[in-house]
Image (cartoon, rainbow, N blue to C red):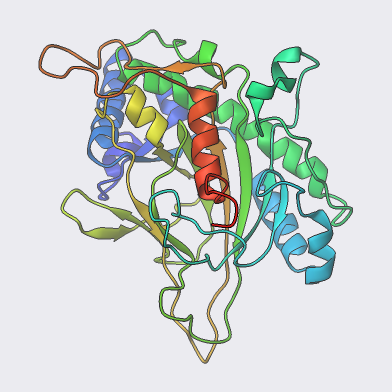
Length: 339
Protein backbone atom coordinates (compact mmCIF):
# COMPACT_ATOMS: atom_id res chain seq x y z
CA UNK A 1 0.00 0.00 0.00
CA UNK A 2 1.43 3.38 -0.98
CA UNK A 3 1.42 6.39 1.31
CA UNK A 4 -1.19 8.03 -0.91
CA UNK A 5 -3.79 5.33 -0.20
CA UNK A 6 -3.34 5.72 3.56
CA UNK A 7 -4.43 9.36 3.63
CA UNK A 8 -7.96 10.12 4.89
CA UNK A 9 -7.74 13.72 3.69
CA UNK A 10 -9.25 14.77 0.34
CA UNK A 11 -5.68 15.83 -0.43
CA UNK A 12 -3.73 12.63 -1.17
CA UNK A 13 -0.22 11.92 0.10
CA UNK A 14 1.92 10.82 -2.84
CA UNK A 15 5.28 9.08 -2.40
CA UNK A 16 7.46 10.30 -5.28
CA UNK A 17 10.12 7.71 -4.54
CA UNK A 18 7.58 4.92 -4.86
CA UNK A 19 6.23 6.51 -8.04
CA UNK A 20 9.71 6.57 -9.59
CA UNK A 21 10.44 2.91 -8.85
CA UNK A 22 7.00 1.31 -8.64
CA UNK A 23 5.49 -1.35 -10.83
CA UNK A 24 3.47 -0.20 -13.83
CA UNK A 25 0.21 -1.01 -12.03
CA UNK A 26 1.23 0.97 -8.94
CA UNK A 27 2.51 3.83 -11.07
CA UNK A 28 -0.79 4.00 -12.96
CA UNK A 29 -2.77 4.03 -9.72
CA UNK A 30 -0.69 6.88 -8.28
CA UNK A 31 -1.07 8.85 -11.52
CA UNK A 32 -4.83 8.37 -11.30
CA UNK A 33 -4.83 9.71 -7.73
CA UNK A 34 -2.81 12.73 -8.79
CA UNK A 35 -5.13 13.40 -11.71
CA UNK A 36 -8.24 13.19 -9.54
CA UNK A 37 -6.79 15.43 -6.82
CA UNK A 38 -5.79 18.13 -9.30
CA UNK A 39 -9.18 18.00 -10.96
CA UNK A 40 -11.08 18.12 -7.65
CA UNK A 41 -9.03 20.29 -5.32
CA UNK A 42 -5.76 21.34 -6.98
CA UNK A 43 -3.60 20.21 -4.06
CA UNK A 44 -1.25 17.28 -3.33
CA UNK A 45 1.04 16.35 -0.45
CA UNK A 46 4.28 14.70 -1.52
CA UNK A 47 6.88 12.65 0.31
CA UNK A 48 9.90 10.80 -1.09
CA UNK A 49 11.07 13.97 -2.82
CA UNK A 50 14.73 13.56 -1.93
CA UNK A 51 15.18 16.90 -0.14
CA UNK A 52 16.98 16.20 3.12
CA UNK A 53 15.28 16.99 6.41
CA UNK A 54 18.62 18.34 7.63
CA UNK A 55 18.68 20.97 4.88
CA UNK A 56 15.06 21.94 5.53
CA UNK A 57 15.74 22.29 9.27
CA UNK A 58 18.78 24.49 8.64
CA UNK A 59 16.88 26.70 6.20
CA UNK A 60 14.05 27.07 8.70
CA UNK A 61 16.43 28.06 11.48
CA UNK A 62 18.51 30.52 9.46
CA UNK A 63 15.28 32.11 8.21
CA UNK A 64 14.04 32.63 11.76
CA UNK A 65 17.46 33.97 12.74
CA UNK A 66 17.18 36.58 9.99
CA UNK A 67 13.63 37.57 10.90
CA UNK A 68 14.71 37.95 14.53
CA UNK A 69 17.17 40.69 13.56
CA UNK A 70 16.26 44.28 14.50
CA UNK A 71 13.92 45.91 12.00
CA UNK A 72 16.42 48.60 10.99
CA UNK A 73 18.93 45.87 10.16
CA UNK A 74 16.45 43.92 8.02
CA UNK A 75 15.42 47.09 6.20
CA UNK A 76 18.95 47.34 4.79
CA UNK A 77 18.06 44.43 2.50
CA UNK A 78 14.90 45.80 0.89
CA UNK A 79 14.71 45.78 -2.91
CA UNK A 80 14.73 48.95 -4.98
CA UNK A 81 11.71 47.68 -6.92
CA UNK A 82 8.59 46.43 -5.17
CA UNK A 83 8.76 42.83 -4.07
CA UNK A 84 11.29 41.56 -6.59
CA UNK A 85 14.05 40.42 -4.21
CA UNK A 86 15.14 40.73 -0.61
CA UNK A 87 13.24 41.74 2.50
CA UNK A 88 9.63 42.87 2.63
CA UNK A 89 8.59 44.38 5.95
CA UNK A 90 5.66 43.42 8.17
CA UNK A 91 2.40 44.45 6.48
CA UNK A 92 4.41 45.29 3.37
CA UNK A 93 2.32 43.06 1.09
CA UNK A 94 -1.35 42.38 0.49
CA UNK A 95 -1.72 38.71 -0.38
CA UNK A 96 -4.87 38.26 -2.44
CA UNK A 97 -4.90 41.74 -3.97
CA UNK A 98 -4.69 40.24 -7.47
CA UNK A 99 -8.22 38.90 -6.89
CA UNK A 100 -9.53 41.53 -4.45
CA UNK A 101 -8.19 45.07 -4.89
CA UNK A 102 -9.70 46.12 -1.56
CA UNK A 103 -7.80 43.59 0.53
CA UNK A 104 -5.85 44.87 3.54
CA UNK A 105 -2.19 44.46 4.41
CA UNK A 106 -1.11 40.94 5.34
CA UNK A 107 0.18 40.12 8.84
CA UNK A 108 3.50 38.82 7.56
CA UNK A 109 7.04 39.75 6.59
CA UNK A 110 9.06 37.92 3.97
CA UNK A 111 12.33 37.53 2.12
CA UNK A 112 12.43 36.74 -1.61
CA UNK A 113 15.17 34.79 -3.39
CA UNK A 114 15.24 34.47 -7.17
CA UNK A 115 17.10 32.08 -9.43
CA UNK A 116 20.54 31.43 -7.95
CA UNK A 117 22.32 30.07 -11.03
CA UNK A 118 21.69 32.50 -13.88
CA UNK A 119 23.65 31.50 -16.99
CA UNK A 120 25.64 34.02 -18.99
CA UNK A 121 23.09 33.96 -21.79
CA UNK A 122 21.29 36.94 -23.39
CA UNK A 123 17.96 35.17 -22.79
CA UNK A 124 18.15 36.06 -19.10
CA UNK A 125 18.86 39.77 -19.55
CA UNK A 126 16.31 40.96 -22.10
CA UNK A 127 13.55 43.49 -21.43
CA UNK A 128 11.02 40.67 -21.86
CA UNK A 129 12.57 38.86 -18.87
CA UNK A 130 11.15 41.56 -16.60
CA UNK A 131 11.83 40.91 -12.90
CA UNK A 132 12.48 37.21 -13.42
CA UNK A 133 16.27 37.30 -13.12
CA UNK A 134 16.91 40.40 -11.03
CA UNK A 135 20.06 40.10 -8.88
CA UNK A 136 19.51 38.57 -5.48
CA UNK A 137 19.97 40.60 -2.31
CA UNK A 138 21.94 38.73 0.36
CA UNK A 139 22.07 39.78 4.02
CA UNK A 140 25.49 39.78 5.68
CA UNK A 141 24.00 37.95 8.64
CA UNK A 142 23.31 35.24 9.49
CA UNK A 143 26.47 34.16 7.68
CA UNK A 144 24.93 30.83 6.61
CA UNK A 145 21.91 32.49 4.99
CA UNK A 146 23.19 32.79 1.42
CA UNK A 147 24.74 29.31 1.02
CA UNK A 148 21.74 27.59 2.59
CA UNK A 149 19.24 29.46 0.43
CA UNK A 150 21.21 28.57 -2.69
CA UNK A 151 21.20 24.89 -1.71
CA UNK A 152 17.48 24.95 -0.96
CA UNK A 153 16.62 26.76 -4.19
CA UNK A 154 18.51 24.14 -6.19
CA UNK A 155 16.69 21.38 -4.30
CA UNK A 156 13.35 23.00 -5.15
CA UNK A 157 14.43 23.28 -8.79
CA UNK A 158 15.02 19.51 -8.91
CA UNK A 159 11.72 18.80 -7.17
CA UNK A 160 9.88 21.08 -9.58
CA UNK A 161 11.22 19.17 -12.59
CA UNK A 162 10.22 15.83 -11.06
CA UNK A 163 6.69 17.02 -10.30
CA UNK A 164 6.22 18.40 -13.79
CA UNK A 165 7.15 15.01 -15.22
CA UNK A 166 4.52 13.41 -13.01
CA UNK A 167 2.03 16.03 -14.19
CA UNK A 168 2.85 15.32 -17.83
CA UNK A 169 2.03 11.65 -17.37
CA UNK A 170 -1.20 12.58 -15.56
CA UNK A 171 -2.13 14.64 -18.63
CA UNK A 172 -1.36 11.71 -20.98
CA UNK A 173 1.63 13.58 -22.40
CA UNK A 174 5.22 12.36 -22.84
CA UNK A 175 6.96 12.34 -19.45
CA UNK A 176 9.45 15.07 -20.42
CA UNK A 177 6.90 17.20 -22.26
CA UNK A 178 7.27 20.18 -19.91
CA UNK A 179 11.10 20.10 -19.78
CA UNK A 180 11.29 22.46 -22.77
CA UNK A 181 9.14 25.03 -20.96
CA UNK A 182 10.93 25.10 -17.59
CA UNK A 183 14.64 24.81 -18.41
CA UNK A 184 15.09 28.62 -18.21
CA UNK A 185 12.56 29.45 -15.54
CA UNK A 186 12.66 32.37 -13.13
CA UNK A 187 10.98 30.79 -10.10
CA UNK A 188 10.86 32.61 -6.76
CA UNK A 189 11.54 31.32 -3.25
CA UNK A 190 9.75 33.38 -0.62
CA UNK A 191 10.48 32.86 3.08
CA UNK A 192 7.27 33.94 4.77
CA UNK A 193 7.26 34.76 8.47
CA UNK A 194 4.07 35.41 10.40
CA UNK A 195 5.24 37.06 13.63
CA UNK A 196 3.67 36.36 16.99
CA UNK A 197 1.13 39.02 17.94
CA UNK A 198 0.73 40.64 21.35
CA UNK A 199 -2.77 41.93 20.68
CA UNK A 200 -5.83 40.86 18.71
CA UNK A 201 -5.65 41.70 14.99
CA UNK A 202 -7.87 44.53 13.81
CA UNK A 203 -11.03 43.62 11.88
CA UNK A 204 -10.08 42.47 8.40
CA UNK A 205 -6.41 41.85 9.27
CA UNK A 206 -5.31 38.34 8.33
CA UNK A 207 -2.04 36.53 7.73
CA UNK A 208 -2.89 35.74 4.11
CA UNK A 209 -6.29 36.47 2.59
CA UNK A 210 -7.90 33.88 0.37
CA UNK A 211 -6.23 33.76 -3.03
CA UNK A 212 -5.02 31.54 -5.83
CA UNK A 213 -1.41 31.40 -6.98
CA UNK A 214 -0.49 32.65 -10.41
CA UNK A 215 2.19 30.35 -11.80
CA UNK A 216 2.59 26.72 -12.75
CA UNK A 217 2.72 25.27 -9.25
CA UNK A 218 3.82 26.04 -5.69
CA UNK A 219 5.99 23.87 -3.44
CA UNK A 220 5.26 24.69 0.18
CA UNK A 221 6.92 23.65 3.42
CA UNK A 222 5.05 24.62 6.58
CA UNK A 223 5.91 24.33 10.25
CA UNK A 224 3.99 22.57 13.02
CA UNK A 225 1.66 25.47 13.83
CA UNK A 226 -1.75 23.76 13.61
CA UNK A 227 -4.86 24.79 11.71
CA UNK A 228 -3.36 27.77 9.88
CA UNK A 229 -3.30 26.90 6.17
CA UNK A 230 -6.79 26.33 4.83
CA UNK A 231 -8.00 25.11 1.42
CA UNK A 232 -11.48 25.55 -0.02
CA UNK A 233 -13.46 22.51 -1.18
CA UNK A 234 -15.94 22.60 -4.05
CA UNK A 235 -18.70 22.52 -1.42
CA UNK A 236 -17.46 25.87 -0.10
CA UNK A 237 -16.14 24.30 3.10
CA UNK A 238 -12.65 25.31 4.25
CA UNK A 239 -10.41 22.50 5.51
CA UNK A 240 -7.19 22.73 7.51
CA UNK A 241 -4.01 21.40 5.92
CA UNK A 242 -1.40 20.65 8.56
CA UNK A 243 2.22 19.59 8.29
CA UNK A 244 3.12 15.97 7.64
CA UNK A 245 6.78 15.39 8.63
CA UNK A 246 9.01 14.94 5.60
CA UNK A 247 6.37 16.17 3.15
CA UNK A 248 5.72 19.20 0.96
CA UNK A 249 2.33 20.63 0.03
CA UNK A 250 1.87 21.17 -3.70
CA UNK A 251 -0.79 23.27 -5.38
CA UNK A 252 -1.18 24.29 -8.98
CA UNK A 253 -1.52 27.92 -10.02
CA UNK A 254 -3.73 29.85 -12.40
CA UNK A 255 -1.30 29.38 -15.29
CA UNK A 256 -1.47 25.59 -15.03
CA UNK A 257 -5.25 25.72 -14.77
CA UNK A 258 -5.31 27.85 -17.92
CA UNK A 259 -2.88 25.47 -19.63
CA UNK A 260 -5.18 22.53 -18.85
CA UNK A 261 -8.28 24.40 -20.03
CA UNK A 262 -9.67 24.42 -16.47
CA UNK A 263 -9.43 20.63 -16.32
CA UNK A 264 -7.22 21.10 -13.24
CA UNK A 265 -8.20 23.41 -10.41
CA UNK A 266 -6.15 26.35 -9.15
CA UNK A 267 -7.80 26.49 -5.78
CA UNK A 268 -8.48 29.14 -3.17
CA UNK A 269 -6.39 28.96 0.00
CA UNK A 270 -5.55 31.23 2.92
CA UNK A 271 -3.60 31.45 6.17
CA UNK A 272 -5.85 32.29 9.11
CA UNK A 273 -4.91 34.05 12.31
CA UNK A 274 -3.95 31.83 15.25
CA UNK A 275 -5.78 31.95 18.58
CA UNK A 276 -4.47 34.27 21.25
CA UNK A 277 -3.26 32.32 24.29
CA UNK A 278 -2.45 34.33 27.42
CA UNK A 279 -2.39 37.48 25.34
CA UNK A 280 -0.03 36.19 22.63
CA UNK A 281 -0.22 34.14 19.43
CA UNK A 282 2.25 31.65 17.97
CA UNK A 283 4.46 32.70 15.10
CA UNK A 284 4.69 30.70 11.88
CA UNK A 285 7.24 30.17 9.10
CA UNK A 286 6.59 28.91 5.58
CA UNK A 287 9.08 28.21 2.80
CA UNK A 288 7.26 28.91 -0.45
CA UNK A 289 8.69 28.11 -3.89
CA UNK A 290 6.61 29.67 -6.66
CA UNK A 291 7.49 27.65 -9.75
CA UNK A 292 7.48 29.59 -13.01
CA UNK A 293 7.80 28.59 -16.64
CA UNK A 294 10.16 30.14 -19.19
CA UNK A 295 8.98 33.67 -19.91
CA UNK A 296 8.88 33.04 -23.68
CA UNK A 297 6.46 30.10 -23.30
CA UNK A 298 3.18 30.53 -25.16
CA UNK A 299 0.59 29.22 -22.73
CA UNK A 300 -2.29 27.72 -24.66
CA UNK A 301 -4.59 24.75 -24.29
CA UNK A 302 -2.52 21.60 -23.95
CA UNK A 303 -3.01 18.55 -26.13
CA UNK A 304 -5.66 16.23 -24.64
CA UNK A 305 -7.33 19.10 -22.75
CA UNK A 306 -9.95 20.06 -25.31
CA UNK A 307 -12.46 18.37 -27.57
CA UNK A 308 -15.70 19.20 -29.34
CA UNK A 309 -17.55 19.44 -26.01
CA UNK A 310 -14.72 21.33 -24.29
CA UNK A 311 -13.24 23.91 -26.67
CA UNK A 312 -10.30 26.07 -25.50
CA UNK A 313 -11.50 28.59 -22.92
CA UNK A 314 -8.60 31.05 -23.16
CA UNK A 315 -6.65 32.67 -25.99
CA UNK A 316 -2.91 31.92 -26.06
CA UNK A 317 -0.83 34.24 -23.88
CA UNK A 318 2.88 34.75 -23.42
CA UNK A 319 3.95 33.54 -19.97
CA UNK A 320 6.14 36.57 -19.34
CA UNK A 321 3.35 38.95 -20.20
CA UNK A 322 0.93 37.01 -17.99
CA UNK A 323 3.35 37.09 -15.04
CA UNK A 324 4.08 40.81 -15.48
CA UNK A 325 0.40 41.71 -15.51
CA UNK A 326 -0.19 39.78 -12.32
CA UNK A 327 2.94 41.25 -10.67
CA UNK A 328 1.85 44.79 -11.52
CA UNK A 329 -1.64 44.17 -10.18
CA UNK A 330 -0.23 42.66 -6.97
CA UNK A 331 1.89 45.72 -6.24
CA UNK A 332 -0.49 48.33 -7.60
CA UNK A 333 1.82 49.16 -10.49
CA UNK A 334 -1.06 48.92 -12.96
CA UNK A 335 -2.84 51.94 -11.46
CA UNK A 336 -2.56 55.44 -12.96
CA UNK A 337 -0.13 57.82 -11.25
CA UNK A 338 -1.73 59.30 -8.13
CA UNK A 339 -4.39 56.61 -7.88
